Image 1 (cartoon, rainbow, N blue to C red):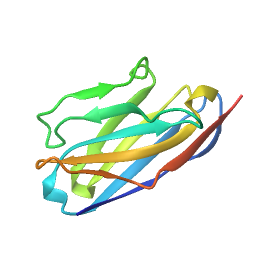
Image 2 (image 1 turned 60 degrees about the vertical axis):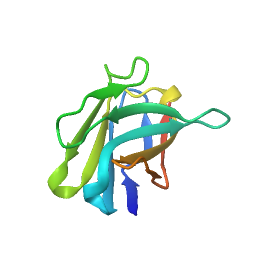
Image 3 (image 1 turned 135 degrees about the vertical axis):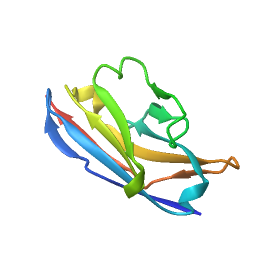
Image 4 (image 1 turned 30 degrees about the horizontal axis):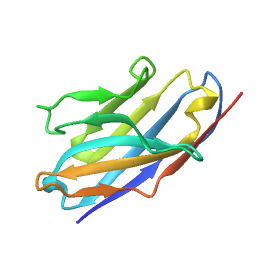
Length: 119
């Protein structure tokens, strides 16, 4: 089992920045991929970023047009995934979920953290 706890969400003005954190616990060694998804009210959950192998040999992917403003990184010593978000827009408002995939194909989600960008 893997537990994921997100933090760092909040209210920010358009143009501002936020850094989200996701700390993993439990069967840490089983995790291969980690990423962030987001879901706005009434919309589907979309990928924000995915690191395909957190040991360092994987690639990092971003959702449409997000790479210019968002950066994912990991601190493996702290079992933590970060999402640095800049130049935030009202359309970035959503619940942001941390995701982990294991080497055996299991997937885990955090409880989500709300990000609200005011215009």
